[in-house]
Length: 71
Image (spheres, rainbow, N blue to C red):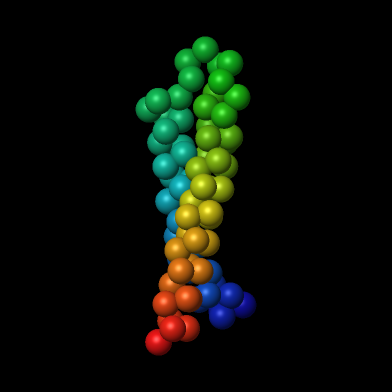
């Protein structure tokens, strides 16, 4: 379990950053009419932010591993 967190540390950090970013986007930009599917409720915006954060973290983690393998 400890090894799992060590290997996925970058992804976890980006998931958290994405979730915070999604929440802040909802808070400050959001949708006032309530008709916007993603932006109308805080948890959708937060989940989408976390998903994007995961994708970015996964991309960077794979890139980091490739660099280490080349050395």
